[in-house]
Amino acid sequence: MSQRNESHYKFVIDNPSATHHDFTNHFGLNPFHGSSKFYRLKKQVAQHPTLAKDSSENGYSFEDTKHYWHKSDNVSTFVKVDNSISGFEVVKIIDEILEARKLPKVKLPKVKVSEKVLNVIISDMHVGLDPNPQGRSLFNYKYNKEIFNYRLEQVYLSVIKEYNTHGCFDTLVLYDLGDGLDGWNAETTRGGHKLDQNMSNVDAFKTYVGGKLDLIEKIINSGFASKIAIRSVSKCNHSGDFGYIANETIKMLIERVYNKEVCSFYILEKFMEHFTHGDHCFIITHGKDDKVMKFGMPLNLNDKTINFINSYIKHYKIDSKYVHLYKGDLHQVSYSKTKDFDYRNFAAFAPPSSWVQHNFVNGVSGYSTQVIPLHSNETSHSDYFFDFEEQ
Image (cartoon, rainbow, N blue to C red; front, side, top):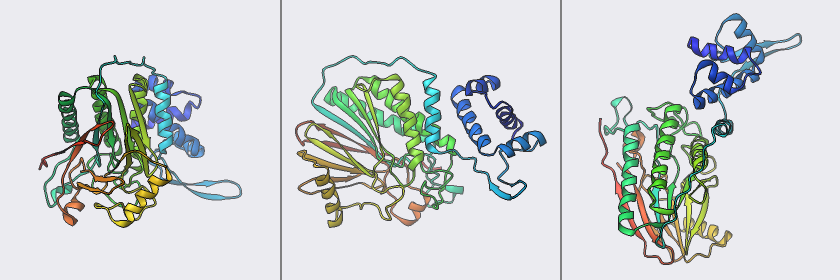
């Protein structure tokens, strides 16, 4: 651990009543990252006060200590040190930081709109994925922050194209169907599944949050729709709580600046949820959850899946004229239709991983847009596919 990190620990240990403002001011740190670090150190010190005191007095590293023996008059206990911080604690930290940095909310002027919804559908962004580990993958694909942000810019250009064709929309909905982040500590958030990654947890978090936030703000400020809605799936097998934390961060930032009638942000915490616009109902899912499901929903409809979806429709008394199910997970494109609903798989935003390249088809990478009249089913659907960049 660096001397600077050790001084951070020593400050927290020696100043138990200090606030995050005291910490960031003392070390001249960025308020957001400095405050996050302060709360993490504070938690660790509170969990291991004996270790904190002893490390401060004897000059060894608190952070690098993975375990120790705690001895008293009657018992000697082996203690493991967990320096991680839970997702909900991170969200609390972010909220406290933002609360101290309130901004005036922005209202956008009313404009004449068409009776159409523009859906923009992105799935499986897998930020942090390394598709060519050690340069030994079957295909030499490349995926990094620059490519991710370039692809998000292509999404925005597609929104401009639809606006130029159809005019101002009643509602523009950005769907993120999950697995936005590739994993945590080079594993899926389910654990036990090792992943090839080229970003740290922090770098992946900052890349995903910064890129997605930039896209959302450009869409809001463009005036292309009367209302903006963001729908982000968190019940997914790669991102899980990490994805929830990242989207909650974006949600907090958006809600500090824009009124909810301008932009509403909803994080889906159940495996499957639904939303209505006019005569249409949209059932949204990643296709595989973060804990329970052994197998995800299939590429093409079968009797079991049809019964499952119909049971959901019946349970929630969905009576919309047109019902659509959107899902990701499989990194493939397909479309099926029954008399009661249609069923669509969307492409992955990221290129295929090395594991996918060696075990399955080479796949496609892209996103989709749909223009849907509120009261008819004359849907205009467009798929956009990326060329894979190679190293």
